[in-house]
Length: 165
Image (cartoon, helix red, strand yellow):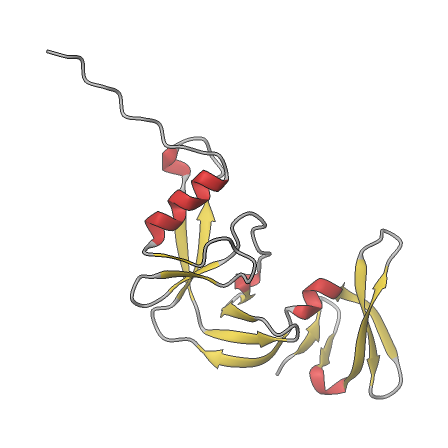
C-alpha cells in the first residue's frame, strides 16, 4: 500500500482528495492534504518529500544495487562505493522513477546535491537515477568514485617517485 506517513500516522493514497504546499513559520514548504472525508492534514512532511511518494512499484532485476559514495575523509582508504540491493523501482507522485531498497525510496536517504544518486545494473554498468545529474552513466563503480572525488575536490596522493639509479 502506498501513502503518506511519518512517525505518528499513515494516510493511504486513496484517502487523499488533493495536496498543496503551505509555508511554515520557518519558510519551509510543508504538505497540506485535503482528505476525501473533508478534513485536512498538515505538517506530515515537506512538499518536496511528498513528490518522492511512490504510487506504483516495479520489481528490480536481481543483481541491481543502489550505490552510496563515501568520500568524507582525506585518505584514499576512507573513500569507497558501497552497494545496497535494490528491491524495486518507484514511480513517484512527481513523475520521477526512483530506486527502492528495503529502507525505502533512495535507500531512505536524501540525494547528494553534488553528484546525485546512482544504481549499479546487473552487468556492472553504473547509471544515474537523478534527472539533473551531470553524468548519466559510468562503466563501473571505480569510475563513479573517481568522478565523485573530482567533484568534491579530492585527489589520491601521488605515488612517490623512485630515485634515479
